[in-house]
Length: 112
Length: 115
Image 1 (cartoon, rainbow over the protein chains, first blue to last red):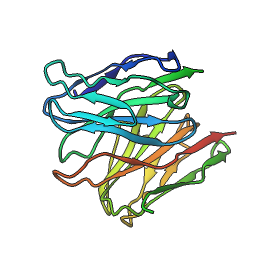
Image 2 (cartoon, rainbow over the protein chains, first blue to last red; image 1 turned 45 degrees about the horizontal axis):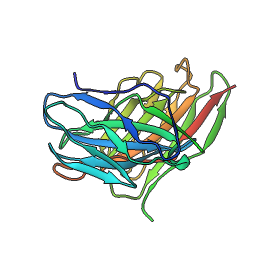
Image 3 (spheres, rainbow over the protein chains, first blue to last red; image 1 turned 90 degrees about the vertical axis):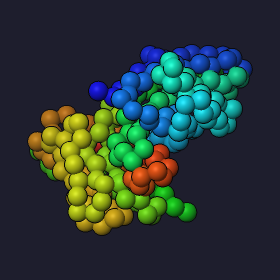
């Protein structure tokens, strides 16, 4: 079945370090891909998205490129801040679909 | 401002009692969802609704019930049949329309604790 696999956390980085959170997916069609972020005690917020192969989603310094050949959507940021500490979820949904499939989430800690 | 509102933020329930979590949205979205999140874990889908007066079971529907009498509202009842109800519950909505933006919008969550 369709699924999303994320790298296990927690990921601990120092401020200004480079961030990569890996995400791969298994899907029978061509889904849209998302990264959501969850700050402590809150709901999820959409961080960025890509709707077709080779699209790059970007927001707040974060980027991810939809790679159909490797079925991946890795999240990157060049210089993390303490305020980026949160849980990050990779997700997919098919056009016209109603159910979003989420990865297990990756917790990021950024130290000052 | 448009958004999705869950209430209450914190809820305590005695064992054996039913409790209802509220979810309201003013985004004019057709589709609404309930997820459960356990500590350190991802999201699991409880129920979802594509349209008023219709809903489907998700992956972990046992011990839960929902209704969708209005487009704006999708309350979740945690019944006494749910063996481990303590969790963080998230409500979400999306347009649910073909070829439209399909990202989900989430509420702030309700933390339910059984005492």
